[in-house]
Length: 417
Image 1: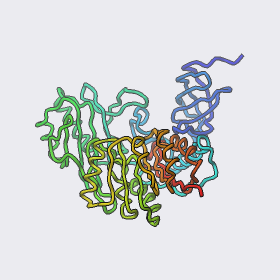
Image 2: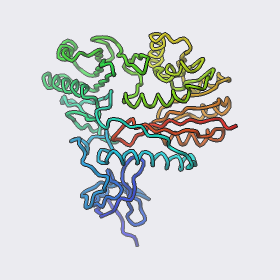
Image 3: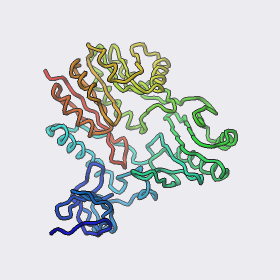
Image 4: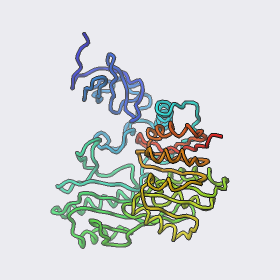
């Protein structure tokens, strides 16, 4: 009879591969065990943390023989913080892991294996994030939530974010130390390549003393509990030849260098197509749609977030673009109004395309679809349906989130002849 495996039991295992979250996979008897921060080739002693019917979870107690891919994480908060997941793996193998992950997911969920990943763009491994959100504790501490938890890990700085954002964060921490009776429940800081910075704080803070304490930081915009208390209600970013205003709640890519690489892939596809009408689904603040306007006759964006649509219309105005319009509403409610569409560009949330939208796409059958995705699982799920009428022409990957398991994909689909 097979021995029962319980929590806190210890075993010596060898990691044989990584799962799609970057954790190691080993076997104990006939059960798979998912080992937090395990790497292929690690021989280690593990402690069982959770027991399921057919698989197990574990953490590493001791590394007996490390993988050749293993490096020492440079962040002192790495083991507790839930922000990074691959800082213990060298950068070369992080990129290999991400390519292999996309291949496996496409094969498993879309049934496609015969395709080429034409490129994987990558940039700075640290200090690349231009936006960060910290959370607060009642004792004045700020930090990040632990993975899959609401437990907070206080941190001194985040190595993934821009160094100037870290300086602003340090100043806010000093403020809370100076005024211990005040508290910040949430702190968002974002910065643009034009060196404009926005700080958004929620909590119990004295407006006058807070703004005075931060006055030497040249912040473009400060908002407290939803109200602008200093500067403008937006900051401005430049993408190629266009400028974009970013409102507090509007989505914008957090890695400027890799954002340019991603958008360039999209532009390169449309550059010589001479399309008449393109739909930009989940258009956000209008970035992709506005960037495409020099290459197509008309672009129509659809976006559900009102703040984002408001920003998109501002961006249209300040860039004096006439061949684009924006609709505020759910994509699935509006896409069926359009019949004669040459191409779709879609950049949906992590959940991917909903079934009604996919059904409508397969009814109007545009010549091409450029699908930008931050989640290869939902991308592969959607591809499986779309490939009933389309062929996968190009796949590009962008390492938008170095030192994490996330990867951005750009897929070009051409309608089958």
